[in-house]
Length: 418
Image 1: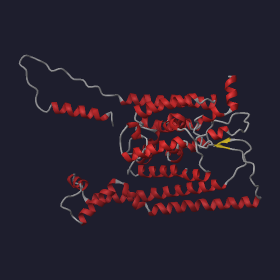
Image 2: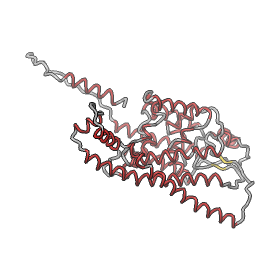
Image 3: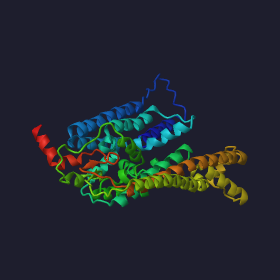
Image 4: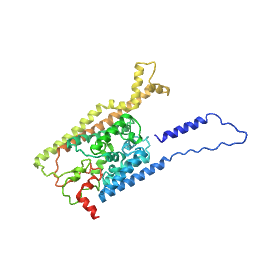
């Protein structure tokens, strides 16, 4: 926006100067031609994609093959300066979720190839190397990493409950995107205002609070809010290669203490073995519990679909128009006045609103079912305890930041030998 505004102002100035005919000089004087530079946004988009691939490749090589953190830190600084402050944090992979969802469900929506690449490339890299995008290429994550000083560990129960929020955020973002109601990820992005040095005060203040929290705990936005991080965690869980614990681990616990996102699981050998019958009963209980949670979630959001549809501008306009018809006012709301001035009819508007509400009924039901399943799976995971004889990395939670490398004595010895 900050780049477009000066161009609009310049265009308005030129138009203002040409409102009246130019003087016709008898001396034969010719007016000079004015050429105005228009930035080539396509070129910048290509630069963005190329730089995105290069930076993710550097991080992947550094953490997966070389086990070094220094390149990740350098990439983080570049990401903050370029993708953050210079490019204003937009278009970002996080917000591109909404564009892709709308393009998949609405054939009339044309999504730029650049937006799709920004969305899909981090997913491809995650499938092969884990969450290298989150490590330092994402400016939002890099900014939180830069200010992090201490890592106060949260309990497993609290972390598990908070980890549900990104999934709920993702589901609602998809719901409002496919119904053309709102791009809520972009609307409530807590760091865009910081990178643009302006915007809604409440959103900027929230971003400031997240940065303050980042000082004392690792990446609260990435762990407990980011919808794209939730999506990447699925692909990271099955990634072909990933950051690993240093060979010949001596169980010193330093890596786990250094991990900002609590993605390293310590050894746990005290699991009480259960009988075969008890295991069968527990599995059967899970198979019954999950569908019930899905059905409960689907029913809940289906009943709430009419309320959720009020986020759509057509539905809000319909309510304003009907209120005005029921109780006419001397001064009509601006939206209502514009609607009638453009030749809109109540019948056409009502017909569109009926279709929108039908869409919300269907999509809300699906969204509710997904929410129920996610909550159910989280509760089941809290009840499970796996036997671990050594330190293990939770691939889904690990952001490949490489902080553990600098704290591992075995890794330090390996680097000295090299």
